[in-house]
Length: 193
Image 1 (spheres, rainbow, N blue to C red):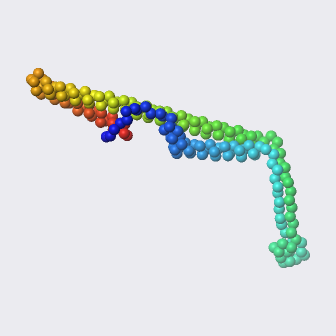
Image 2: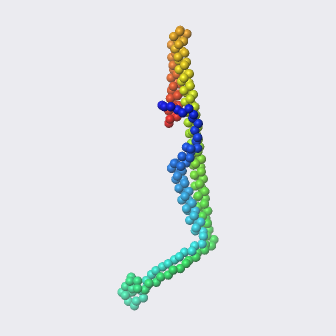
Image 3: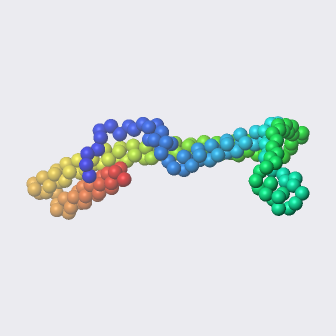
């Protein structure tokens, strides 16, 4: 499976920052906040007095007959234009204020959703790093267990060779060694995954 580092202490902050940057769901939540803030600015703008510049242009026909009047209208012979400023001051304006308050609440709600999602990311990353550290410690213990079981097997084989142990005892120790190797391999696979 490969070599494992001697030190398994990981800093969870760097992977958490990366997850905050790269997760699509968090980017979508940030975009939703931007949309809600834009709607809030529009709602706040609707409460303010308005000063509009209004212009118009037309051509009136004043001729005595229909045909010449149509010709004068579409020929733009008698143009009429106007430019004016319109000032609108809202009085009461409860609908616009309610819209603004609703937009403020929407921005706050979206910010809280983002904050909650970021906390979930931090917790998930910390849990994953903690699990990885525990697996790394299990690998170290598993390697030591395999080493000890190998020593036990060698000792049991030597005892059998001198007649103080049986083949059955050697098989039991061999089984314990195989189980230790399986646990180690399972932990190494889990660590890699």
